[in-house]
Length: 399
Image (cartoon, rainbow, N blue to C red):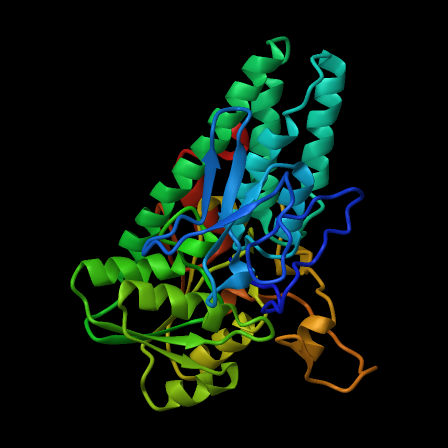
């Protein structure tokens, strides 16, 4: 589940949506606009996302492309700015993307018109537009479906009332994710022995969720229980989510950790330093195949070769039971410059061909367990997944 934008040099990238107003940061050389401004904060426990105000309010988020250099908050006041923030990975991680999209719908419901037909046209247009931001993280579509269903149940109500219930639904999605992450942490911590070495890939912490995280929630909970852990953090090329974000979160919590290059994972496993691997996921198919940040599949193969358990930590909202297997998961392709450039400078010869998938799919056969808010799905089989998810009441699609 899973920053991802190139470590910035100065100006923020612009959205390619027509007439968009990208959120601006207060990093050097940026120019905040009147509609989307930013603020800085040095809080020890920063909040990834928050809604400010009532139904006429706005979405505030950490600009994760600025970490770890600067902790910068963005204020998104337009639907275009929310789309751009998701697309450019200022907000990233499947649960956080879903929350941002839900609040984006609330922004899309704002506007001067009180004509009912125009309101519904604008509202559905906003949802369809947000759905185009990123294709792989299923939480995006799950959250938009919930918002759509909630709105439709109130057709005939006043526009003011519909705006109110939409904000309530977005806030409920936000609240549920906090609870979910804490539950995942509790279930996952039971899998870790005292003095374990654990390895993680990309960022599945509080920055990727409402709070606490999925994979990192396991580490945070184990720490709270008094267990001693040491976390090995893959830097996660090409966009360094591990080094920029996960290492930053672990340092904030005082958890002992070591940053390694992705290519070093096999060596630390061979040396006996790793007793478990835990990652997040952006979409999990009905058979248990899991899409996560590119490189996760390689880590799973290495873990199996070294007889180290490999776990995926993800909420119910990350499962897409409409997909038979990982072969059906759409894989986002990112810009070549994310590989050919770093920190504003070329790192590859001009004109070289580039293949840059943002995600890969780890087969269920390599996953020893999926840590959910309901417990650990083990073994990872189609029948077991269905039994666990159907046994527990889901709020999917606003039900």
